[in-house]
Image (cartoon, rainbow, N blue to C red; front, top):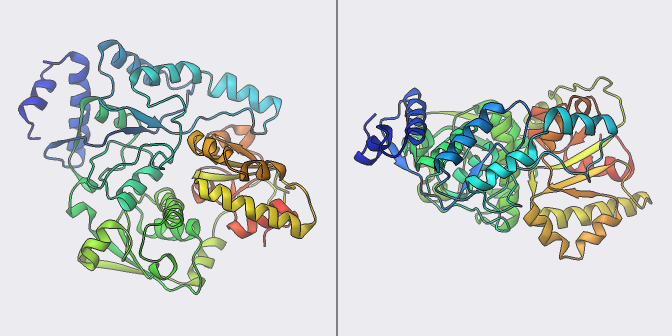
Length: 426
């Protein structure tokens, strides 16, 4: 790898042994993917994926201690993925015992480390760090050192920033040394589309379902989607960005997509159009029948497929302020239609602490609370990783949560029916 004088000096240990080790790690990482150089991280803030104080992450805490002791903290302040625990979220005695004693027993200790390393603020825990309320929205062209898959795909696709799908800990290393290896989605060639996705549905496709179908088809490649502008328009409004947030998270988790282009909508697609397509592009047509096929093929891994749901999670990735408002209206209308006063399944809507603070300032907050819905900053995935939680029949409209846990996916309309009427959503 060709290094600048400053990069070589860091590698040679002129700025300390610890920083030299960080640089060496990043160089080795880049060499695996054929990177020939390192480039500066230019984003104002970083974002870390490792937010949970798992008891088993001893080496991570040792690494963080070394960085803190040597003074090699992040060159940027950073946000971090959601906290794993919240007393407001329903859990029985045994679940809480496992959470606190066998899973996230080092949460407070780890959060102290994060504070010393450069955490933006105490409440900067969310997977949707790019929302205005959080304050970590990259600019077009910014080079990032992120790892959270749903944030990476959003930053690349909707904001036009540049970031590879890094692994956890590599994100903080890039921020500490100030450089990342130049390959993949950082390059112009790596951002060209190898798949043409032709949307031919008769109605606006469910964001999570459409993203799932595309992710499973293209895996880690870059899709260029045509026909979606019919349903989304050609401007990145708040509602469109919310749709793309959920769509992108599904492409990233059900596949390994780090970047997508939406014809006439996302920044690079608006600038270059079909010129983003490679010569040997593959085509995938998605109509109503294809989405139904994908939906029906999701495995049901509950011990009893006919069990009544005991919990519903919404917000993986975290919900936007507008989503919280819209869902307040939906839940109220559903309860009015069914003649019920409160949701019939314990239901948790998750959003970033900053978004929840803004939500509490609106009249929607008390209205939603009156329906029995709980709001939380929790990471639903971290909750479901508890083996006792994994045995529960949990429902969700998040294809990310479905993919990584035992939670069962339903569309938004089906979720609404289940939590307000008690139906099975079908």
